[in-house]
Structures are given as C-alpha cells and as structure tokens.
Image 1: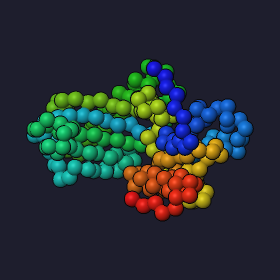
Image 2: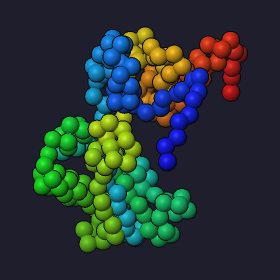
Image 3: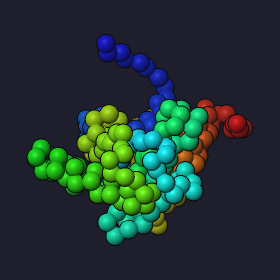
Length: 224
C-alpha cells in the first residue's frame, strides 16, 4: 500500500544524489542546488565477499579484523566472526572481505560480461584469503559475492554506492554539503554531510541536524 505522510520537517538520510530522482520538478526552480548535486564527487562502491567455513580450517588468526594491501586490490578489509557473536554456529566462522570499487565499472556491462567479472573477483579474493589464512580451497562451506548492482537493488542507494563523500579541501566544512537545503523543512543527514563518512561522522551529522531543527524553532539548549 502507498501512504502519504505530512510533516513540517523531514530529515532525508538517503544519499543526497537521490534527491535528483525524488525532487525532479522542484529542482527545476533551484538550478544552483541541482547543479551542486549533479557535480558531487562519485562516492565509493564496494565488492563484498561473504563466506563460511569450519573454525578448524582457518589458520593463522591473530585478530578478528585485518587489512591487507596488495597491487591487485589496494586494500582488502577482512572481518572474522567469533564464537557467540551470532554470526555463525559454534565451531564455524564467517569470513567477510571487502574492497573499494568504482561503481560505474559494473553498470556498463552486459549480463555475460558482468557474471564473468563477478566470478573473477570471487576467485581472486578466495585465492588471497586462502594464501593469507592457509585455507584449503576444498574447505569453504559457502562463498558468494555482492557487487554495486546488488547494493543498488537492496539498499536503493544510487549506483549501489556504499560510502558517502570523503572529506577533502574542496568539500570540507563551509565548502561541503549543508544539512540545510533550499526547501523549507527538508534537511539532510548521513555520510555525505559534514563531517562525512564513518559511524562517528554520521552520528555527528545526526546530532548537528537535530540541533539545527530545534534552533529553528527557538530551542537552543539541546544536549543528549
């Protein structure tokens, strides 16, 4: 069912690039803002490898989080579950590995080329992990790969982006995208708003926009 809700204030937590789709007509009279959104830097995409295996079949574990640097992947981020964290039955582990990727590299492919590229990444990441953790290739219980196409389908983030806007001198602070928009009552919050990516950045963004909304209503002394 479709529902229509009305509110004096709306906090938009999806990527700001999504406004180009949701506010097509209103943006026609806010050309400067439309151009600003169109010219935002391309955020990062990700390829994520999900897998499971018996704990006894993964060796050389000294931590549950790793970052491996290589010419093939630049940075490969790895997370390994521990007993009792709910991610795998006791005696088994989940091993998740991710790399950054350009989202556009995945959307310009036909079906056959896409599947070939996806399978190639699955094999390359498997080989890297087998080498790093002394894993026998026959011991994988499960392996699958998520690409920007999957992230777009399930999260509705444009082009399957997973990161926001990393802060650099061109979009930092006063030069960044503000929580305020040209549309009264519409506010932005998330990993594309100062101070940017990461859990801490998103949390600070939410705190900042909350204070701004309350201040706009004459409530100045807001604290958690």
